[in-house]
Each structure stands twice: as C-alpha cells, then as structure tokens.
Amino acid sequence: MRVAIVGAGFGGLCMAVRLARRGIPHVVFEKGDGVGGTWRDNTYPGAGCDIPSHLYSYSFDPYCDWSRRYPGQPEILAYLEMIAAKHGIRPRFGAEVSELAHDGAGWLVVTPGSVERFDVVVTAVGQLNRPRVPGIPGAGTFAGDAFHSARWAGRDLTGRRVAVIGTGSSAAQLIPPVAATAEHVDVYQRTPSWVLPKADAEFAPLTRAMFRWVPGAHRAYRRWFFDYVEKTVWPALIGGWSTDLIRRTALSHLRRQVPDPELRRKLTPDYPPGCKRVVFDSLFYPALTRPNVDLVTEPIVRIAPEGVRTPSGLRRADTIVYATGFHSTGFLMPMTVTNAGGRDLHDQWKDGAEAYLGLTAPGFPNLFFLYGPNTNLGHNSIVYMLEAQVRYVMGCLDLIARRGPMEVTEGALAAYRTALNRALAATVWSGDCQSWYKTADGRITTNWPRTAREYRRITRRPRPGAYKFGTGR
Image 1 (tube, rainbow, N blue to C red):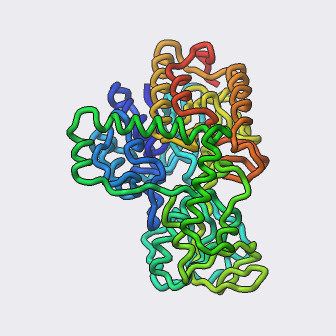
Image 2: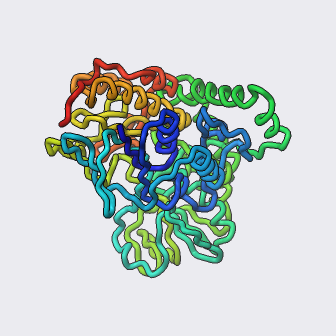
Image 3: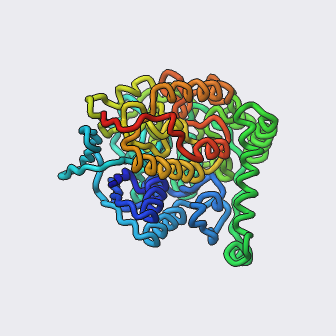
C-alpha cells in the first residue's frame, strides 16, 4: 500500500519514521519550506516549550543533550531537523494539500499542480497551525506594522512603541524580551491567566554528560518527570487534590513578583486554575512591572492609523503584535475532505469535530488523524500522545493489509462519544470560561479528559469490532 502523510511536524515525522522502518512506501507533504511545523513557524523572541525538555522527544530517539530544563524553539527545531536527516525523511516542501477526495478506489491527494492516489492518508497538521487574528474594527487602517506572533519573520522591535494584544502563553514569552529593547509596550488583556513559576535552568556540563553516558539516567529522569505531571498536575484538571496547591502557588508567585496591589488585582483570575491554559513563566510578571510597560484592561474600541483606541482614548503605537492564538477547533481546515459518496467531513463536523479515539471518522475509510479531536493535553507531552497514535495507525495498516479498507462504525463512535463527554464534564475545562479548547458554542473538541497513560492504554491496539472492512465509500 501507499501512504500519504500531510504535515512534517512531530506527528508527521514520527509516522514517517515508523513507516520507513517497516518498508511501507509513503510520501510526506509539507506546505512549508522545512520540517518542524509549529516549531518552524513560531520564531518570536522567547519562543519555547512549557513541557520539560526530556519529555519532548521521541522515545525511540531520545535526545539526551538538551541545554536546559525547558527547551527553546531553536533547539526543538534542530532536534526535528536532526530526526529527518538521521532517518532519511525527505518531505515534498511547498506542497500544501488543498483537497483529499476518496474516489472509491483510494484517496486522491491534491496539491498545487499535482493529483496523486494513495491507499491510506494520515493527517498530521496539528491543532495550532492557523493563526487567529480578531476582527477588530479599523485594523486595516493601521499605518504601522501589524502581524501575528507566529509570523514574526525576524523583526527587530528595538526602540518601537509596541501594542501586544493577548496575554496567553505566546504573549508571556515574547513580552519580556520585547520590553527589554522597545521604547514602550502596551499589553492588552481581556482575561488574566493563571501563571505558575517556570523552574527553568541550564543543565550543567556534568549533568548533560550523565544523561548521555550513564546507562538508564536519561530514562529514569524522563520517567520521573512523566510520573510527576501525571500525578500532580493532572488531578488539578479534574478538581482533585492539587487544585488548591496550584492556586496557592500561582497566587504566591503573583505576590512575589508584582508589588503593586492594583496591578495584582488586574492579573488575578476569577475562574478555576486550568479552565484556560495555564501559563508557565517566571519572566512575564516582572516585565509587566517595567516603567516602559502598561497593562491595559479596557476593551479595544477600534484600531486607528496611529494606534489602538480604548474608551479612555488613543494609545499610540507603531507596531501591533497579535498574540491571539490559533483556530484550534477548525480541524484540517482549510483542506476539503470528501468521501466517495460526496460527504464533506467539515459538514459532518459542523457542530464540532469528533473522531473515534481522536483518530478516525465514520464514512471516511483509511483516513487517520494525528493530534485529532480531543487528543490535546493540558498537563503532559503531546509527543507521548503522538507516539501512541502512530502505534495505533501501524496496527490498523496490518488490518488493512489482511482485510481491506477499514472504516470506524457509527456505533463505536457513539459509545466513545458517551464516555468522552462524561469524562469531559468532570474537568475544569467545562467551567464557565472561554478558551481555545472550546468551539464558539462551548463544546470541548481539543482536549483529552484523562491521563496520558490512560490514552496509551486504550490505543494499545486497534479493536477490529469497532470497524467495518472492505468499504470504499
């Protein structure tokens, strides 16, 4: 069989490595000019990961030489480039897939100037790849430079008057280095985030040598961190024992770093920790206390040619940075995906994307999603989840080779949906707060509501009874 992989980030590269090891012909389609996905796109100052570095590499190719506890964007991208080179993965760059269409005999993959047929398609486009820029009135009239944080493109903001819209994870990372060189920074906050201290540090040469050369040291350290976040951070997401611990830690962090009581008041959330994505950062709060930084909590009325207008008046700016996140719930957009009967996957998902185990959808045989609906984590490494999904897909390929095209049944999805919704209802994400975890009508379509270890357990191998075989719709 021939397999098409759409995307060359963590998921796509993992899938390609596994296929190559089995000698299964495949093509990796990548719209960009290099591997890395979100780690190729997000080059803003301070860009990095809030998952410990030793959890943020493949188990089959662990990277032992991370320079610090939480890796920065350049180091993560270098790791992915190393993986591609080591395993001989050569994606087709500049080949953005615009359409996937099943014609009854296989999947047609449409890219600029090309249409190819494959037996199986695996999408690995991620959840955080399409920047979301809010439709603020007057945005098109701005006379300065305005851009999304994921489209930084080497800009230098030294001496500029900068407006940063948003206070989530990307904003928390980019504001400190920008504030250190800019003339002035206005930070526009709609809702404050819970912020936990980020215990980042460089690894000493002796520590790095131990991880590399002492048998079992890296594996033990990785396992310790994995167990820690599963047993300490995860319970807070279901209102468990660590909820109050995280709340107290975050409020103590705020008190230590922000002496001004009025600024502290503006930065104190009024919703449970974890309902929105928690920010891990130890430089964000100090940056907000700088004399050249103002936190603006008034709503934005409109954007004018000279800057940003609030109810109090015009705040001048020559640069606007939209740190406003991504279209996280628009899975597989803007690709068109249709089956042999003409059914459109996005029509099927009009009330919110859903997939059995986050991996397959009824009516779409031999189509698999990596990092699909309800597989994001709020506490652990997505690389762990991706490896579980790739292992599952490899098991499905064995079934396809023996029994023909496979398609998940409506009954299997319905049973899974019931269990999933019951688990989601018990999480803090179901609370009354807006977040990128939810659709506009409040349906949680991004996050997995149990531990990462539980997800790996239930995806250990495909269950043939959940599928019908030999279909070509």
